[in-house]
Amino acid sequence: MQATLRAAAPVEPLIEVRDLVAHYGEREILHRVSLVVERGEIRVIMGGSGSGKSTLLRRLLGLERPSSGSIRVLGQELTRMSELELYELSRRIGVAFQGGALFSSMTVGENVMLPLREHTRLDRGTMEIMMRLKLEVVSLAGFEHLLPSELSGGMVKRAAFARAIIMDPAILFCDEPSAGLDPVVSSALDELILRLRDALGTTIVVVTHELESAFRIADRITVLDRGEILVVGSVAEVRESPNPRIQNLLQRRFEEEEVDPEAYLAQLTGEGGALE
Image (tube, rainbow, N blue to C red; front, side, top):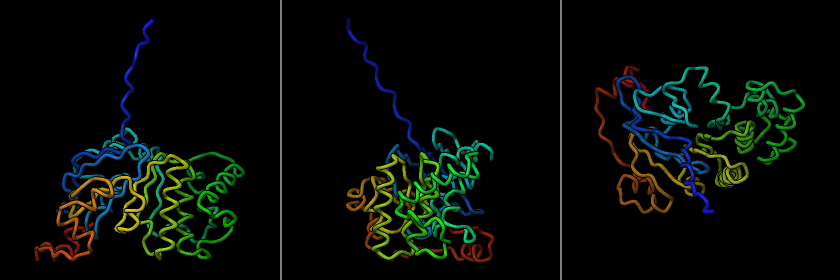
């Protein structure tokens, strides 16, 4: 009997953005941005100050609605979701905020357990076991009783990662994870991101302007500049891009931009919205 062969069903991307437009006031920040993040990859979204990367991150997290376009995360269209549906989706997403964003009045352990307290009905003992396991993953075992003020900058970032992965998210978003850290600590944090992807199979999206960090961890890089995607590719493809704007970014060369005086005045007075 001849076996019937069936083609494998295509795997849906975990994140799919199509023709995304975002405004602050009348100023258009993102100009028809499109990108696809595949399951299990580390995607770095890179760009200089004012490039639009933070604006894009807030839309991907559902914190702000786009002006137009489509954002599908874990198969769901964010632009059409209610606040309750967005809340339910947040259970499957982890976020390591810039600066750590730990609550100063809570211990490290209490900070890490916070998502469990908000989203589950687990008993205290189970939550503490899960918290200790995640602190061990980020090399902070035994530090659960300390306050954030008693940790170094790098340890605060690692504690924030433990909180972000406490519920084993399908996607982990990292906002400027290396910002403010010295090169040694930054390199250790990059290694942690790689370990998390390999050990947990988590898809990771990292927003950063740190070139060295981006090149260490990325499977693919999306380069944003002035609200537009300049290139999407591997580290080698980005390094070798002939686009002069990308080379200016990589070589840290200042590129003067023409500014409309009236638009600039409107931003200073708060009438034109934020730059990013």
